[in-house]
Length: 360
Image (cartoon, rainbow, N blue to C red; front, side, top):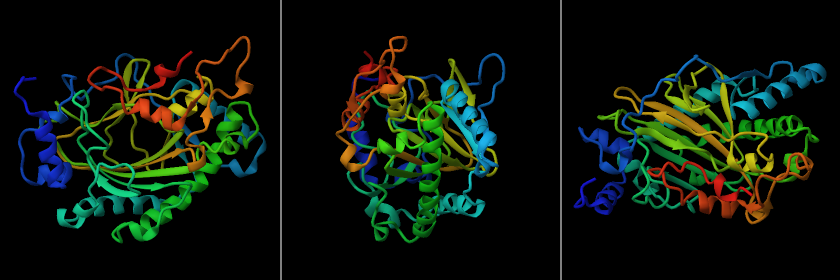
């Protein structure tokens, strides 16, 4: 990178437009600003070796309990240990609600810039905001080629009037189902760890939600940037809905594997905090979204993390998962401390997770 490159000025000028990535595309740019350029030579990568597919888990028959529930728990255990990602079908969220959140996401982002500018902010303390850069972008970071509209539901609550009317009902309806699904998946994950079904619920490690509605415009240089740069999630659990266009990839055994869209499916992935709590039994894996030269992609990710009173609580490996044969892998850490370290990681230095900072 040239020594005279005014990095801070370019970022500042971009932020002042309050138009996001879509604003750049609408202006007809032909080159991406340099703070979006990835150190990788290409954002597209085919899995090497044997073609593999991430697990798809069918919740059909869950209500019967017994052998069927145990079968689903076993599938979740294997997927969480081996992949850290799995797709869920027959999860109880109506197709109409899923389609509505994607349409609401598209409708918000495709408004005129003037309708969104007042919400534009990189300040994560705001409960409802529109942004491209989350927090302070450091020189060692790479910005993602996408825009986000986010709502923070601390302890499950956000004032509805703060959410724009263009997507308010869609978000409200979707979050009701997300909370119900969170409660169910929390039970299943607890049992998959060999614990009582209320173990994770009692820890309040998924009491708050952060919904981010993502919009990926086409890139004039898709080989130089990523829709979402490589990362792991610092939270406990993520549930994602994606449209039919694809682009999501996970890092599995060193290979980048596509996560193909499945009609009616939701994607669950283990977060860093759950890897700590499970004492490495469950995996939080790195993932990314590749950029594209044509068309747009929309998705909505719901991140679950501790409640307000638990932000400073020390989380460590659950004692039932620690033994002489399997000692604790991590020291105790609060969610606030973990996220602080996570935000200091350097993408350009290939630091995609903060987990190594807390290993014993």
